[in-house]
Length: 306
Image (cartoon, rainbow, N blue to C red; front, side, top):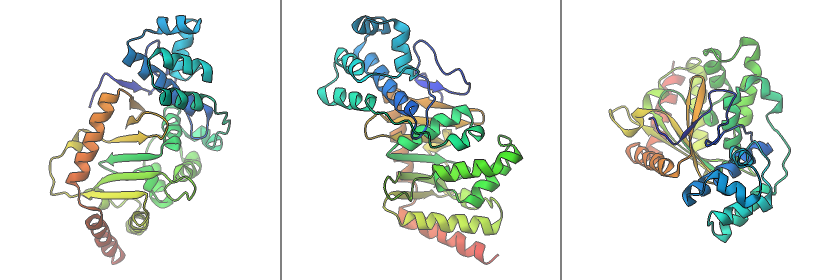
């Protein structure tokens, strides 16, 4: 799908005067800066206020407003609150944004993996780490949050983006991203998986059997809901392409669309709402959770007999 309200992050130069940019990480202050900037820009556009008018309100230059919205500038709580009041935000919104701007988290969890994470993917890693829930539809492979080390190794070694010498570190980075079994801050995940993905023997029968058993174990958790899209459903709304929705307790939801050399971030809330409708439609067309588990168990049994 192509939309006007998306941000393309395929290159290192992520900024423009009226577009929001992305360079974030899981426990990195830049992740919060992105979310605050996203909220400030969305509120400004809804209010019909120009960046020049916002700059006049703060008594600053228009480039500073742009840098606040792109996350290149550390937004201050008082300035963020003043802008949100100008945009007509309610008290709860103002307090929420001021609270986000007041955080001083300086940790960067993925620093040891920085060399193996493309700049455009660091953006997703950061946002995924801050998200409270996620919906994912992938047509060909399992999403990273669900992968075993063996499955991830087979996928990454078969691609062109990771040099062989960097493969072990890239696998460790993928495992470190996973939050589904985090007891203090688990990610709530809903995913629709194409049935034929279960039959793609990534890494061979033993690796795939372990991977599918891992899915069954994850499905026993309250925060994980996996549904299988049966092959008999020949046409559905997911055929236009893979996508992920990231939802946050303190910020607006985002859409994420990845391709070989970059990613698009859908930020326009009307378009995000459409993706939410697509997610709901996919889940309604897919098998119920228990039937999905039965389908996966059948594949495990079959592979264990190989």
